[in-house]
Image (cartoon, rainbow, N blue to C red; front, side, top):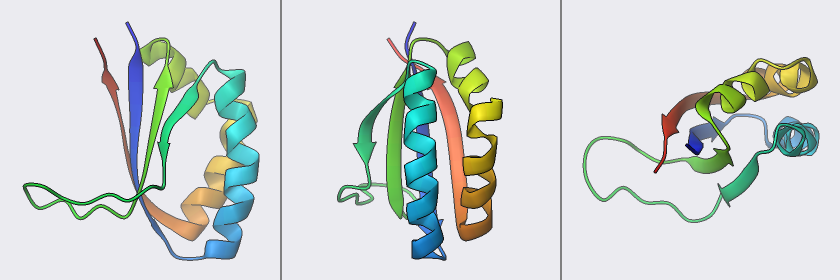
Length: 95
């Protein structure tokens, strides 16, 4: 069953965030993931969520998404993102 990683990112340091993007993309592919949405226009339709930069990733399974997030290959990129942005990230099973 496919799984989606949904990310809402408030970037504090755009220059460092560009470094994060360069490092993160190859790790997503390495774990069989793909970008479905990456920073396009996003707006709230209902509720209290204020979308910032929205990224949507698709993986084959929830387990594979978690393996990517916790992987040694993604570790450096994750640290950079955590230092230059405030992030909400979830994984949800698809259909």
